[in-house]
Image (cartoon, rainbow, N blue to C red; front, side, top):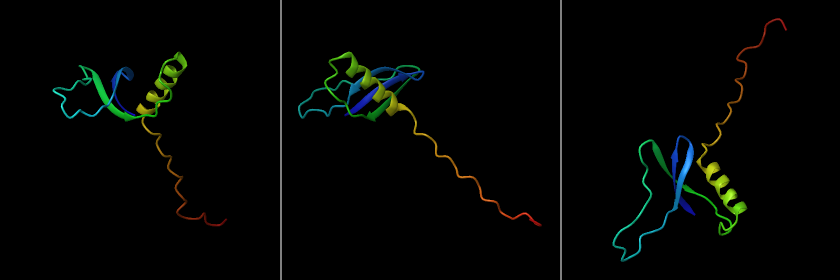
Length: 87
């Protein structure tokens, strides 16, 4: 499911599922970021219908994980360019 997510200072303040416009839709409604806020479009898998507190907490964890930047790859140590003399 695609979601619009509004964040402010690293905290989620709102979400909205992305829905395509209907053929005869006169207008559309969408979240808008206010001052100091950022909007993100993410893809997440939603399990269940978010009817219980556990499902909602799991949904919040999935959204938070999707917003985190990917971990940086560690560079391999550089190989020695020359050998020690006399060894």
